[in-house]
Image 1: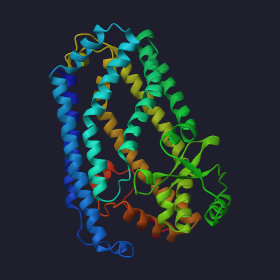
Image 2: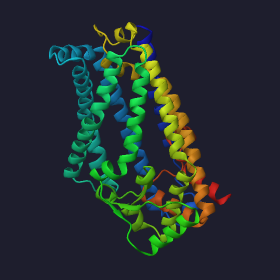
Image 3: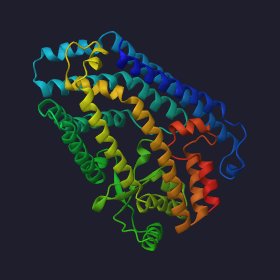
Image 4: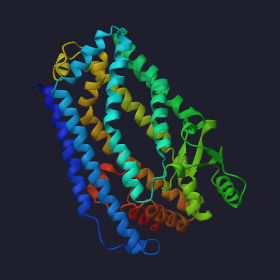
Length: 409
């Protein structure tokens, strides 16, 4: 076992232990007493149900993590990567196609092995708590559509990355970085109009008092409203949400139909104001810039480690290859990715506070607070998460912290 194997194993162990500890602390922090702030929205039965939901999701998440870790370790130390390499090389498909098939088989195999967990999560846990609206047909179609998009969009991108590192020596990482950057921007631009409608229907919000209130607010904050759409989220889940996506002429705000059904007009405008706040504060552009910079660093480091024999020896590989190197480097890069992920979570929580402040100061406080309370109730959110769990996992601040921050404005 060489230094590369030790680093990767240590990272896997540290990540697993940190998440296990955070899960344990999060379960211990569940408070049987309903917080005073939510007594106007929750009843005792609903609050108890939210705690049961948190416990069940957490325990299932631990089981899933144990399975995934065990699966990786068994495949690794049984020589699975070398075994698969021998099979794919024997087909003599050429360097690019060999890489695509090798990585594709591993991804599909992982998805198939994870399928029972996804089915149980959707049709047992989510069904048990009244969230699931997904039919077996929609579930299967989502899988097939996702696979199709991965092949149509991800396949050519992966082929390009492989070609750069196989045929270009010195500056392959720069070409790969440029290609991924262009691809990312392209997807961001076309996703609202061409990709997202593959999975959901998006209908323009019709003329109504709500639309007029939204239009008045958009004019007030000088937001060029390209479109506000209603998404049929109810065909998969009863949970509610809203989001901002795209840029340029293709930017749009989407409100789940469940959100519209469960909230007053002022609350909906407040939620929309929050999403506009993300745009006005340039959070989307900042996140994209950070992501692009991180991708460049990752490709630069990849270009260094692809020529390291020790990385391949750690996985019992007899021949070095770009396609296997991509997978192994991804595991070696995990410590950096872990640190970056925590940093991005902190930044995301900061952005949420800023968007809340924007919505509350340019519209109204109370509708924003009411919307947050209803969303937490409708989604059975954990109202008392442990700070360490929040630190590792939350992209949004706990709802009580958000409400306190809004009230303090």
